[in-house]
Length: 428
Ligand code: SDX
Image (cartoon, rainbow, N blue to C red; front, side, top):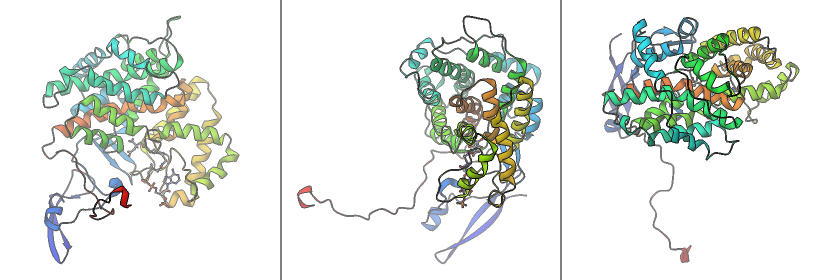
């Protein structure tokens, strides 16, 4: 449907605004002139009804539980594609030919090493530092290393910065894991796949050879695909807002990492597994369901609910299937998985969760797989950040090349003191 107009009546006056239509999904009312016309701001804390940009990257239908990356359904990409191919798709808009994919993987592979000076940043942290704290610091520090790729108005430099960020996140993440263990850092090996390289840098030790398990590699790659991008979520909006000032791309991604860490967002995968372990056995589930429903109790079911999905998160479905496969093939029986499946069944039949349309989200099952692969809970959000860097970089590039975009500067509803004169301390 083409663009139409809508009328707003305020202060006894009618104001007309364009209603813009996308290729699919809700229309938007173009209110860019609203304050100039009416002298009033719109008010939307949490941006529940606000479109911050036009985008062609990812589309979510929260009611239907649909997630498309450049039009391709997430379940098809998870089952048939690879993380490197999805990265190319998110960055370039189309699936690559074999030659294009080989060239992209070749380029990314040759950016996986980090400057040796960067290793010294790790030694400033305590060994028990949370890996996400290390990621915030080290990725931000990349801003001090690559001055040849920070002119954001130069497409060539934007491309190099994008490739460097995607390529170095696995190395930085693996180094954070090794540092916590007190084990030596492991260099990337170019003959390995992106995900195989990450697993080797994470789990290999100098004392013996490490063979990448194809099952684990495939599961890890699928988990990266499921976390790659998700429209204008909190951390992506953080990256866009930071980037709108023309900030250094590495610093913008560090800002996204900081936002993702929160337990309401990417930190939920760590919180969800900790919650499932705290519940421990299915008989304890009713107690926690009651707490989640109690308004006076801040406890929420971690891994449940979503700002956009009011249906099953399609990523959670793929994640649950992958958890089954990995645990079966590894011969791992994790009682936490039984608790998760029982909790899901109980919650999905409880009127509180049904009425509020609360379903498992991407973070509900991911921790079970990551734990079975051998990651501690503190690394879960690091893996989320590793994968989401592709989405952040794609969205950052889109923001910079969008003619409608300018520095983000929201206004406010002021409820503080009105003008008053200063009173010297002797008179207070
Ligand atoms: C991610 O945005 C994205 O796309 C994020 C993400 C991505 O890929 O980038 O999908 C990744 O962050 C997934 C979400 C991970 N977070 C969690 O699992 C944490 C637990 N979930 C909640 O904190 C909550 O559901 C949010 C933060 C995810 C969504 O919160 P909203 O949209 O602001 O909804 P809300 O907090 O206003 O909740 C609506 C109602 C409230 O009850 P009322 O005030 O209406 O009576 O539902 C209740 C909430 O109390 N509710 C829950 C609940 N989530 C919401 N009650 C119990 N347990 C929960 N998990």
